Length: 484
Image 1: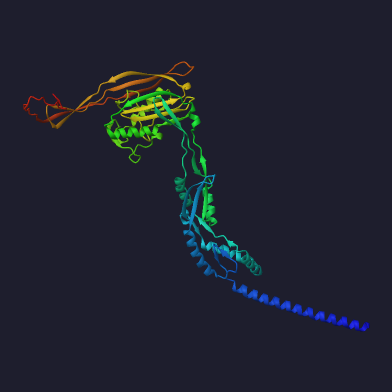
Image 2: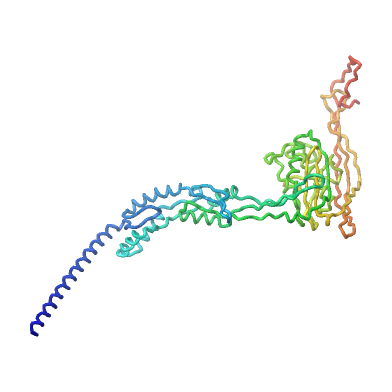
């Protein structure tokens, strides 16, 4: 009995050994087949992309390097021409501006060669067997390799500057609007909008990630002068009026335009007024017209003629309000709309009128040109109002010299005045300022010299004038020519 059991166990053990050998043989054969297949596959993929590789939206699986390069160049051209939607939004989610721009307009381009090289380097960095496993993983995950994008920063910044001009708005300060007869109202301030400092970085990231939309955040820029600053303005400190002829249309237009630029200007304590900064260039491009101006002592046509009457009126108002005068220049000759010593000439980029609000109160300038009257008011707090007295002292009055010139076109014995000329002056201006609770202070403002302007007379050298007896008792009209 025991002998039979032993033989049976031996047979079982022998059968197990035979089965194990068969299984090992099959396993070795399977590995050999797989290795051969893998070797063949790897040889085939030596210059081809394995399965599962995607770059910039295209499937490179099985592609040769040459075919992939050709495909990438076509993709790069289409990528460059693709539009990017740019939106400018405030923190509350409101879109204030939306526009489209191609990627190449932003200076961006997809580098086909660098992108393909990046992908191929990632393929080659793995051993052959790991490459097969990675290909299977990529096929399952569908992961893409990011393209290489080049961006010309100067071109991107140039587009961003043009975008800012369309998107950004400047804050508006609170202003004074004069109504009439000592009545005015305060116009509220308005904040501005500007792109945040990271706008260029956000555009760069959107291009690098091949996104189709880029949101640029907007932030508010607060105004410098608010309604609260102007609540203390309750008094009219001074008013100055000069007169002009509305028949001189271009000159009248320039006066009105300059006055409109100044009207409503607010100066906080310590602020300085600059006529050239507020009014700006007086050129035809800026909307001014040609009218007579004084250049090197001569009255000639020029751009913006008449604006000196506005600067003179503003100067007299600042002087009478007791404000500190920083810069002022007088004309070469006396002018008809202000007494000597009280005028102020200006030339953009060369001669300015500047004064400072050295009072504790905000002040507002109200300027208006209408019906031949150029009017400037200074408004401020009644608590800070200064009492000012202007004193003009004439040191000398110089007669106008006479210059005569022969004229062959005038009959002999006839004199014609072509320039009446003007007397010259040497004057000083003082002012006495009395502030609330302080004694009066007398100060010298200026000493000015206005050279006389010659009286020019033409003397006739032609044929003597023939006298014709009147044909009727109607008296003749007096001639503009002076008879000897």
